[in-house]
Length: 136
Length: 136
Image 1 (spheres, rainbow over the protein chains, first blue to last red):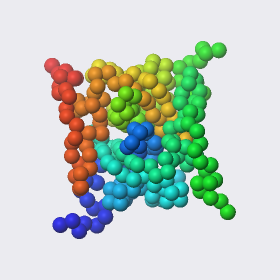
Image 2: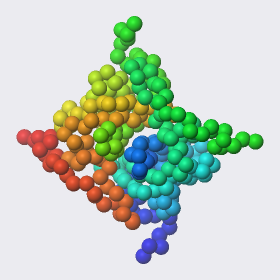
Image 3: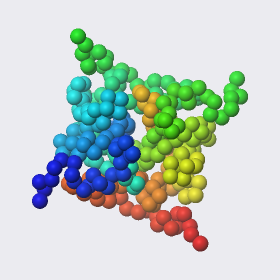
Image 4: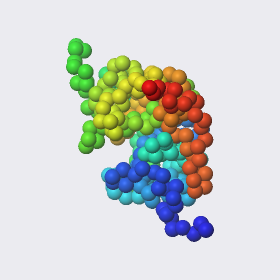
């Protein structure tokens, strides 16, 4: 009864995919409650996120499926997957391996805060991106 | 020095607006940490959100500026505005008046959780939408 092809499940049809087949996905740290990242998923990414319990995104710039942490090691383990009232946004509660979600080496991508008329960085770089991604 | 027209401020230029002039905005309850809503802002909505300290969105379906709570009373008071590393997503920490963010009368829009292969509602309706929006 459950021998469906990956991505064929009907729960995926409850998602209102955009014209280009994507849905915005918010990753939130399940322990701290901090919002880490907003990224995008296609149908395959969401199906894999649910089945592997590791967050997968669709990279709009690279036009490629992207298992979060595949190069950085900063995998996001899935605790809970949620869908909003309109079916056009996904929320994933995660345990972020290594405590870093952002490619800049910070805990979260939302590290800038509006202060009067300017954005100021409030969060420290925890690890040099060169050390995260290597280079040679 | 600060006699700029609304929406002319340079901090708005740090946002990478989509081709249709929008940015996704996440509203998070500043007290509980719950993610309430993902909606969209245009430049005017974000400028007004910052200047009035009440969240404004752009309704894609109605193609109109929308002060959150204008018909429901469920205004979202701004505590903190954040921008992500790529400048293409906004996070707003809010105090949600009335404790209801969703048009279905629930605390948050993300009231459905994936359980195996189906989405199940986990959050109660706190107030009948008919009572929120009136009808006569």
